[in-house]
Length: 403
Image 1 (cartoon, rainbow, N blue to C red):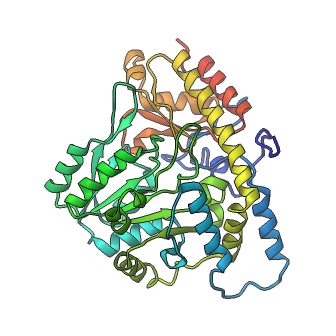
Image 2: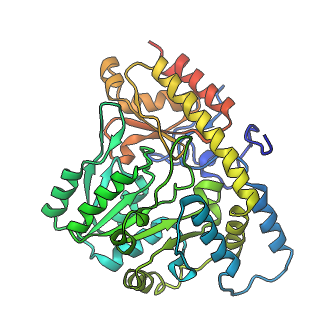
Image 3: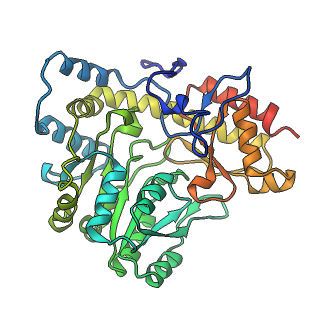
């Protein structure tokens, strides 16, 4: 393998909440491990792999010039996004005018909410729900209405279209937030599922805000379908948000973007986001994106996806064979597992707080699923060297789920 996905990188003191937040952010981050156990950071959605060399090379090249003044996004920036979306997602007709910078996907979601809803209005989301949605949408005064995903007979998370339609009508909802691929469940929606969802939204005249930040992390055997691509109506009803941050470990550089084809939707969105004068691109994040979407960045990503697919296969198989009562659906995208611990906790008389503490005590730093609107679940990040995933499973077997 050309790129290094096996080295264990020490991130302590290197601006990483993933490790420095452990034991110092009560109620959000895991507790610190007991003496004798090192941390295995498996909670926040932050990869523990070195990013693609093409990215650091672009950043270093730009820093060799000693001025960092005002600037506009370059043609290289827009062309990199257009080429990436065409080659990876089959997107056609995308132009620079359809693309706009966002300081972050969540910031873009809030801007879109403000453009099409008033604080106090209801908004539809699926549950389990990404904790960032809960904090940002709820924190800005909107009333979140959840339509629960349901697992079918094969354990696959599915949307309940009848429930979506009923909740929208009962709550007079005109804005919905869609997550594709879904976080935390890891579903990569099939085309027919997105089409059905969009039919529900269209029938109820909903503007759809689609978070597609995970669209590059598609595991073996699945394919991302951009929400805007399923129909002409979807193309003109959806505000979509993307970023290279999850894909290339670039969250600390800050740099997301929107794709909006409708002039009307785009004008309303930018009227909100530009009035703050804070939604301004960092020049290094621009060059990082160009490096990420380069031929070498694409090659690095393909190797990453093989590593993540192997980690997911290993972890899901291990959990199903060793931890009776823990329900897990194999994710098709993202690098997160969502463990439903309801049966195991009930059978063993253990609360979810106690179970989470058992893991953090031995250095398995996983994340409380209640933050994602599930009463008894845990989310686990598998974007680590496989040796670390194997060690985590060993500790879970020996210290956490042992009878």
